[in-house]
Length: 275
Ligand code: SF4
Ligand code: FES
Image (cartoon, rainbow, N blue to C red; front, side, top):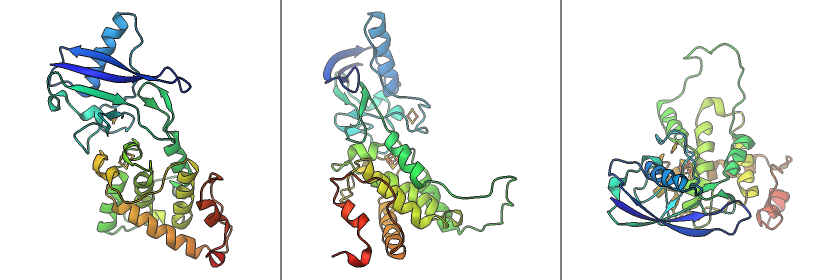
């Protein structure tokens, strides 16, 4: 197979960037997409040129580090699969593919197809934890978890933090990611002590990272390789409303919301004084 590529090349965050055209022949249908890029890079290096920078680690759809746009679609045309798990048999001989990094203000481009996704780490750090006693392992049945809650928490925990949901959303919203993290812990008994502060802190941090608001378009769920469903956003919104109402009167500022954000007014104004 012969694949034509238009790849985004950007030397650093400050560089303007441009598309560069390459032709890769000798591609087999059994190669993964990243292996096809490995072939391109070996040839570029042999010619003394800089290889195309892209992130990868497990190449098994587990770690969440890989990801870029293929013809404008996060993780490529398969849907619900990472780019490392996408194979060349899904493309035609001679097909032209345009590769771009995630496009979102919260994900600045570091080099070529690599973006800085530390915004997602900071959202987790804001509230994605539980307070538990450390030490010896607790007895397995000491805390009973209803089967339904365990199943739904497990589904939400499947999020691998790849950021495709943000890249696919026209608002660059991080709601699917944040909703998955909030649901994962909020559904379990161990996650109850911080349930209210968790949702407030994590959603405030998402705003501070310049991630947009969810308008229920659903592109995020279409591309999510972990199959995270929109219901996690509904659950997060419910928790946020309950927490906002139940914590009224208490000191609320939980993260730095940009001064331009209309949410700043709501965060600073006690509930009973809001219009
Ligand atoms: S919700 Fe899905 S698309 Fe978003 S970061 Fe998690 S795994 Fe990736
Ligand atoms: S490299 Fe780990 S999910 Fe793709």
